[in-house]
Amino acid sequence: PAVLNKYLLNGKALENDYYVIFETDRMYTVVAVNDLLMMYKDKSTNNILAGALSAEQYFSSAIVKVTKGSNITACVLSGHGEVFDAEIFRTKILPGSGYEFKDVSLVSQNIPEKADLLIVASPESDYSSEEIEKIDKYLKDGGDIVIIADAVTGDLTNLFGYMSEWGVSFDYGMAADDDQANYAGYKTYILA
Image 1 (cartoon, rainbow, N blue to C red):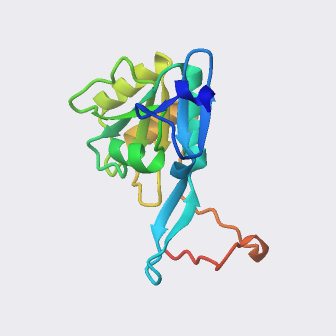
Image 2 (tube, helix red, strand yellow):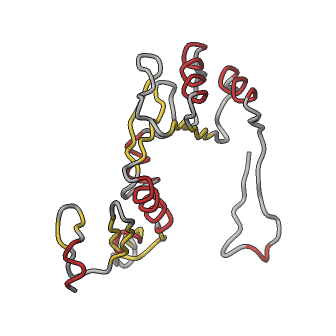
């Protein structure tokens, strides 16, 4: 137990729990095993049950943090009806340490110099040519981008046209497995 004295989680000593510690010669980060389970309340019994495992998000974030030596600054673009904002990424999609999410509206802001990643989260409306120029400068300076498009994403002529210059194309379609042997439970029917 004495070896754990040097590790803190949220500024507090580790106690009475199980942990996974990620460490390099520069820094460490601690993940509580209890945080790896997404819990829900069974309505019929009022029991608290484990519904899913979120270890991948926590472990990936911890690995990024200790290998980079600091948090990754991810700028979530806003102002075009995006499905997800920084708060959703911080609390639901990639919880835990390793990423710092910030909302950035290219209508009124530039991409921060410290941005390690841009996230375009399924916008409802297209980006202007001025906004595309900001994205272009960021990418040409070595920045990274993640673009999320979903079934309701419309035709974003400017954004999709710009991304095609980088060899990235978007198409409408559906991915499904029609082999019942691969279903873990009941088949989900997808209707238009």
